Image (cartoon, rainbow, N blue to C red; front, side, top):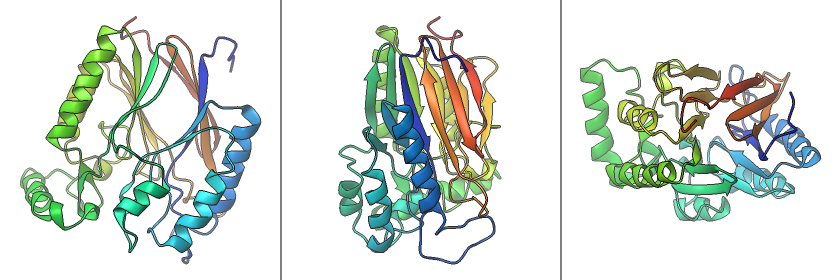
Length: 287
């Protein structure tokens, strides 16, 4: 790929899910550290501007899992931008401590800005089973609603952004559109049909994709959660939805990381291991 007109580059990792556990299917939890080390070495060698972790650093948040992963992330020569995955909230560690460890001061909002680009995080774990007792009734109600319409996303491992968060994100997108900026959305969970399994879409995927597709500034949505990965482009809006494969699903054979290179009106994804390379044209919005 030709990166001569690149404004900036971001390292991308997802679903490391490190744990001191036996392998389960393709998930080799203990091997994740080695593949994360490979990714950080690659990012340092390539001199990325920042590293984006799309969630699920650990399979559960015991300190014996968090500590080794955070030690590796601290070897990054570029700032690391973490967002929450559902597994990060599972386990005995207090959620405030998890947020502190991951240096997450705000669970959603703008995370990076350079050139005509803004990176905005959405937290689809905000209302979820893993968020704790305060969300239980709302979660149960939403799952029941989804089951009534036979939506496959009615799974306990999913969640959604609250109406308050969605309004906040909408306000940011309105502002970005006025500024003629382009926006990359980062989120843990799948949003669009076709970009991952239907069982891994966030509980409010229809509202989510409607907001993103109707926002002229939004170029792409990057997420993890579905370990197989996936990709689709909305035919009307041109919004690209990219699901990055899980590092933990190495099967003991290969890693999964990428560098996304950003130009004025394109994103080049350079993949390693299980991540495919592709060029995304962003001419259809704010073009």
